[in-house]
Image (tube, rainbow over all chains, first blue to last red; front, side, top):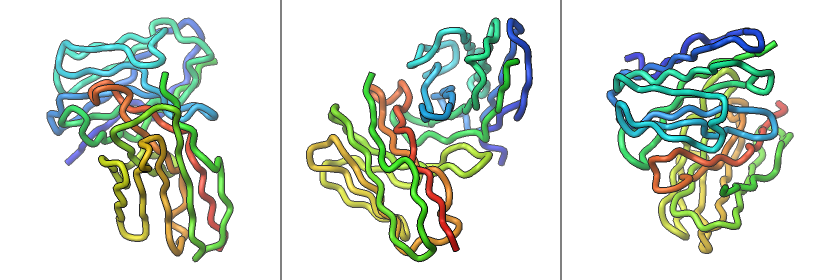
Amino acid sequence: DAGITQSPRYKITETGRQVTLMCHQTWSHSYMFWYRQDLGHGLRLIYYSAAADITDKGEVPDGYVVSRSKTENFPLTLESATRSQTSVYFCASSGTRGGTQYFGPGTRLTVL
Amino acid sequence: GQQLNQSPQSMFIQEGEDVSMNCTSSSIFNTWLWYKQEPGEGPVLLIALYKAGELTSNGRLTAQFGITRKDSFLNISASIPSDVGIYFCASYSGGGADGLTFGKGTHLIIQP
C-alpha cells in the first residue's frame, strides 16, 4: 500500500531551469493539493485540484503550473526556477471535500 | 488571507512534563485541526475538531475548539521522547476543497 508518494525527494537546480515535482497517490482520492514549507511561514497552499482536469490557485501560485490529466497524479512545474522557490514541497490528497488530508514525504528543492 | 497565530514558537521541556500550545485567529472557523510533523516527513493529522466547545482526546493528547470559534488549544500530558516534532494548527481556507491554512508551528523539544 504505497499511499502518497513524491519524487524526487531531493533536487538541486539552477535559476531559470524548468523543474517538475511529481506526486502520485494510490487511493483514487478526488482532491489533491500542493503546499510549500518555509521557515517562518509554515505551510502555504500553492495549487489544488478537485478532480482530473480541474485545478485552482491557492495562496502562493505565482511561478508554478499544475496539471491533472489522471486522478492519481498531480505534477507541479516550476517553469523558470528562482532562488525564492527554494523550499520543501508537500503534496497531499483527500477523498472528500473537507476531509482529512494525507501528506506525502516532501521534496526538498534547492535553486542555486 | 486568513491567518492562524500559533504560540509558543518553540518549547524546551523535560520528559514527563505536560505541554500546552494554542492557536488564535481574528476570523471564525468551522473546523480546527492539529497536525504533527517529524523530521523528513509530511504532517500527520492528530485531532480534528468540528464544533465550538468540543473537547477531543487522542491518547495523551487533548484538544479543544474555542467557544468563540476563533481559537483552539492542544495539550500533551506526560511528554515522552517520541513527542518531539513540530505541531501545527490548521483550518480550511474556504469551503473545504481549497486547501488548508496552517499556523507557523510549535517546535517541541524534550530533554531526557
